[in-house]
Amino acid sequence: MSGSPQLAVGSRVRVRDDWPETRGRVHIRTPHYVRGRTGTVVRCLGDFPNPEELAFARPARLLPLYQVLFEQPQIWRQGCAGDQLLVEIYGSWLEPS
Amino acid sequence: MVELETPRAHHDLGGAGTYICQEIDRAAHTPTDFDKEVDAIRQILGAKGIMTVDELRRGIEGIPKAEYHRLSYYERWIRSITSNLLEKGVISEAELAAVLAAAA
Amino acid sequence: MAGTVLRLEEVAGERLLRAVAALLAAKGIASPTEITEQIAMTDNASPAQGARMVARAWVDPPFRALMLSDGTRAAEMLGIPMRGAPPLGVLEDTPGLHHLIVCTLCSCYPRVVLGYPPFWYKSAAYRARAVRDPRGLLAEWGTVLDPGVRIRVVDSTADYRWMVLPLRPAGTAKWNQDRLAALVRETDMIGVTLPRLAGG
Image (tube, rainbow over all chains, first blue to last red; front, side, top):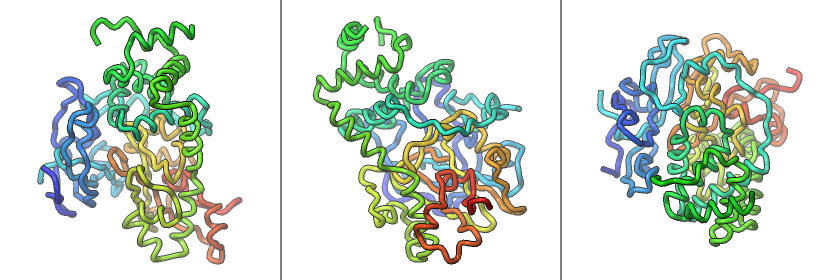
């Protein structure tokens, strides 16, 4: 699983609603507040070795990295309409929405 | 403030209710000699392929919550660096104990 | 680690550093000279680098375009050493959109162009609040956005490092690059403040 990005700019994506930290020692770069949320891909940043594997000195596969845009008030149920959150997320955490 | 009901790890601080009403300490804190030396060692270990920044972070996240928030930023780093070096066998526990004892 | 006799939590940071540094020196991994050199190199990076990029972008449209599409190359063009550094991304403020950078997971910061991250950037309060209450947070710096300006909070959690290209303040039309660069602060390039004229 590497190479060219599988998700195009403008794609609607959902972040997997997964909580590996409840199952043992892990290292995760997907912030808790975006899990299970839907956003839009705004940039494809290229392929990077998976930090979840690098963190344990294991061979790391390349993953596409995206910048995904979310509506901020939807996440916190507070805030100003129109404000947004832009988060870097690896392809392994995203599924088409 | 209400927390999002997620089983977040303690370092995963976005929106954390405990801090959401806390004022930001905006004062300038110049890095100390200790801070700079720990930072430099981390960079050297990274450049020499001995330890990645991801391993540093994993080690920091492994510090128990109360301690994580009590330690200074670079105190967390030296703890993580040390655990990583021990785990990888770059240094041994016996060696470290001996140096610590000699300096005591 | 089974059978651990050494309790790291009982060793003060300074003592641990001295011991680790002694072992790394003895093993030929990091000598005191190497450490001193590394510190000197790190000290060279400062917000003045980022400010130079911003000022150049304000007066040089092709440079601005390059900076927004490839921050790393733009930095290299100004002689900022980027080898070994994470890729640099630059996000442009517009009259209707303001960017604010945070790392909620640790403290990812565009060190190569801004230097050591400031204390507040690494604080739990900043990391918790920026993504949830950005306007309340900006108010602590006295930063008030014009009505209708949207905020885009950037959670810098992965392989890129992000900085903000702020709007050029009014009243600087005749200023040269050096004078413009002197105006730009680290807080302007993270987005907690806006560049402003002294006394303005």
